[in-house]
Image (cartoon, rainbow, N blue to C red; front, side):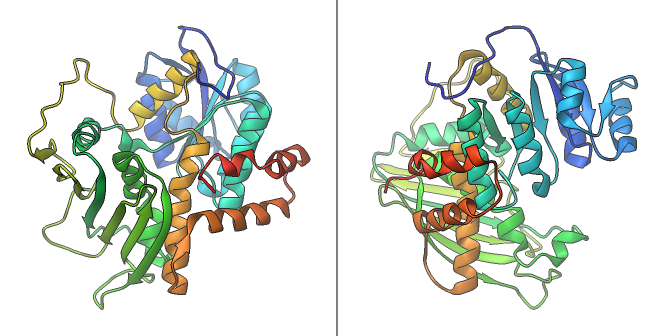
Length: 370
């Protein structure tokens, strides 16, 4: 086994509680209720009406609900937590669960800030409990196929994605200072790490807002990341481009010494030269259901999932670095940003044992080479 967390070695359905009964919480609750891998024991939400409504929606009107995570988990015998709260609640909810000996599957982002994210990585290490972040767009057969094709191209040097949509959300997104980068780009940034099998080194990013944009903040961005190994990842995106819109996944091109791969985000990818890949005999679970499968499988066999916090934190760091670069007009180095975030974390009132774990340096040093 390749593990740094305590497995739960059983083939029985994993008993869980879901924390958060909003729109995304309802989607997770439905996925959990439909899965044979988990057993939904309860729903936690500060709004008990929302929790009860979510329980009724999946045909479980008598499902236990509560406003506190660990007490409801103890009461119902749950052995894991699925955290679908708002980003500001990710740190306290996940911290409480991990210290209670409960592994956590959480929605992105890791936390509301990079210092909090580092603290959660340290808490996972300290408690020997798995904290995995669901980057649901990784669980897509087309992504798996595009990565397999790319691995046959020799040395990869270029990965680019065009993302052009025109959603009219209304509400908080319209007032955000960096709506595209903060609320959306992490999906493409995270996929670039997967497709290139590389980590971010630095980024130069520019944001702008066309005159017709209905967003208060900049709804367009162009970011160029240097990745380990020397490859470049180019993100060119807009949330205010009506007409001829791309997929929500974006439109991708990956180029290497031996050819290129194209993926339109919705249909099977293609490569030139053509590199046939073996068909998946068993259809994979996609989206959040795929993340749920990997979480349970990791707890059963002890192998690190690709969404483990110590890895996923880098996708969040890419977002923070892009925002800083756009705001300052300067190239931002990921390692320097992480070092600064660590220094900030050490000045915050986190648990003393968590701070000691951060001071030991293993959490940060495991993310990127010095």
